[in-house]
Length: 72
Image (tube, rainbow, N blue to C red):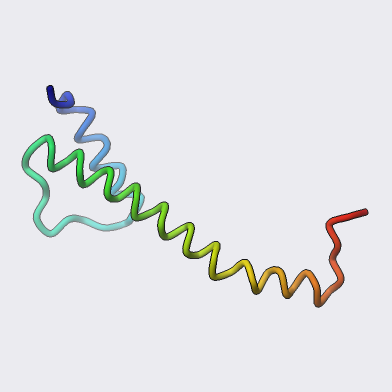
């Protein structure tokens, strides 16, 4: 039971556009396209999580420096 061709092609193409890259060897099978799409989504999520972990201390320090309280 594989995905219909248009669905796997849309997933793969959308993820390539999101990551602004083109694959060196494009996947040829439906399973390969599905895996490439899921992996690209996972890599994007990891990138966002790592960026949040890196920038949170700096933003917290900035809030304290300028005495920006979230309370009224």
